[in-house]
Image (cartoon, rainbow, N blue to C red; front, top):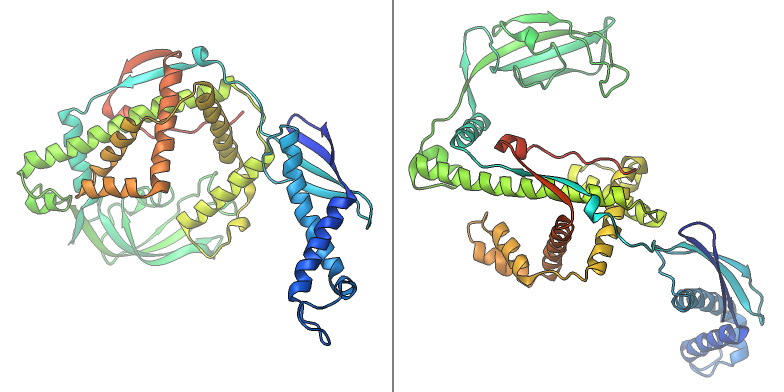
Length: 436
């Protein structure tokens, strides 16, 4: 077998492979012999059909099958002999195909980048320090009460935070527009659910009233046909409901699985959950900065095939998350390309750090992580056992632990400064920066 390789770009390889005719004919004959042993042809007993008849009927299909298998096997033999590491499947183009002669084809594919991760000591990390205070716990109790708020019908004028039941009809330039009308809408004033000006205009209205309001759609409104336009809404108010947050009592505590200990027991449970959330947030912030630093200091080229594969994975996840009657490939690839590129890039870098530093997932940390996750369930022992009985789930945890060990490894050399912040500052959602 003859092999020649041409580098057409940093990662793309064009490999020409020549397969001897003898190998092809051997494979074709082998398939024809297999066919002859089971072929049923009128006038011949099974297994007694002459080979010339078998060739007349089946040689073309046998040759196609043989070539297909030979391309696959010879490709992997060639990349192994050339010590290449393909990223994705090759694009194959036959150059010659003539019976009795050597077969030659071209395989175009990308390879994984070869690089060494560097720049650990140039990565800057701001490591936040925070604690859950009594005031933070009290504020969380208020949030939990607000989330469980019910509304009691009142006859007074509507105030901010009241819930109205309304119908509305929207028009622009005297004509109704798509999505501008609805009936029986439950709207909390001040929730920001509607466009600016809509909710404020309903403060002071009463049940049974009809009011015309004229808010303007924001210039950056998602529906560009409505962006920047002023609409006229005729709003009918059916009911006004005053907020009635639940009392901090045993009935309320039971909604969150706390059945004893009263208010102090409930506060202790809330604090425990907040502490867990805080620790996760602090770790996530450090990890995010480490990963951003690794990306910034290791600008490697990423195989397009891996990005395309990750885009498809993200499409499937999006359909599963948001549902709808849509096939994943109907979603535009552009929606996911930045995220896919970052995922692939980080995957390559993290894998290389693991290889360079010869890291292996620490069994103690794996058990600690599983135990921590299981603590949120009523029967944690069963959850721990379930993880250790499911290899796929256990491998996911192992991967997360390995990533944490990568973070720890880089952190030992990074430029770290500590900063004390409030609980709220520490648990703010992170924003993922774009990839270069």
